[in-house]
Amino acid sequence: MRSRVTVAALLALLLTAGTVARPALADALLDGLKALPGTVEDVRVGGTWERGGKSGIYRIIVSRSGGDPITARLFVQWVAYDDNGGASVTDTIEIKEFADLKVDVQDFTSDSDSTTLTVDIQTLDPNSSNNPTYELVVTSPTQYKFGPAHD
Image 1 (cartoon, rainbow, N blue to C red):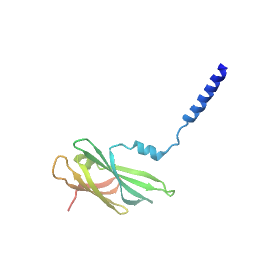
Image 2: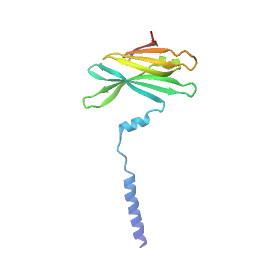
Image 3: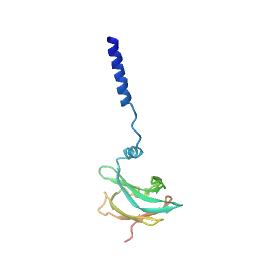
Image 4: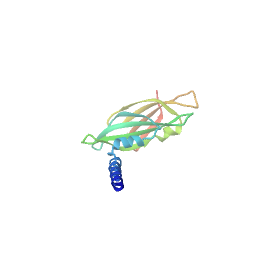
């Protein structure tokens, strides 16, 4: 009788372990979102682009860090669409000159045509009552201009 209980218990344990130990189906989107740093606080579509037979959207990303003061970093991504309805990031740049300012992004607006992205950025300077506005003009992943906005 003892061996029957042991065999039955072992069989039940193996069956339960088999159902629990199965790996979950992979979900690349969910996995990617889980890997996104908590400091990424703003993601917006900035317009559309076309280049070399490809097309897609510009994605503008703001990441913030610090407690007091809060400072931001600014990134631009090129997201390309494929013929099957999928999308992939083809290029990413950081606007290092913006990070060097050590200011926060209060708000931003963007405009684009097929080859150029323009972003107007309102900042919040923790060290001054002056909150300057900057302009970013991006023409490719290797070429952009960044500086004070001209009224």
